[in-house]
Image 1 (cartoon, rainbow, N blue to C red):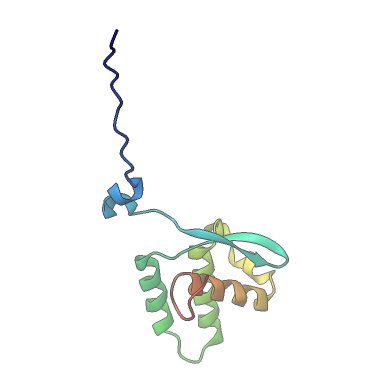
Image 2 (cartoon, helix red, strand yellow; image 1 turned 30 degrees about the vertical axis):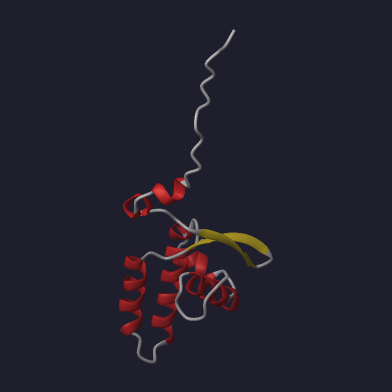
Length: 116
């Protein structure tokens, strides 16, 4: 008695290698960072967001208020839930902590020093 056993071939294909770059459009890359003793999630900025920040930063002269507007924009764009922050919210947070958070977002997004 003989049987014809059919053994399927297994193909080890890397599913990521099969993805088209267009499939990645809109994909967010994020990581957790410390902010005021808690963990918050930051996202890498998109090219369009970086260009928006750079455009706003070019208008800064010596005015600290305008620099603070850029800092708020970076945080609103790069912090998960950041778009919900009001100007009043920003006014009730420590400036040094906001500055550190903005720096982390910029580094993570490839602007300035490279983040982890």
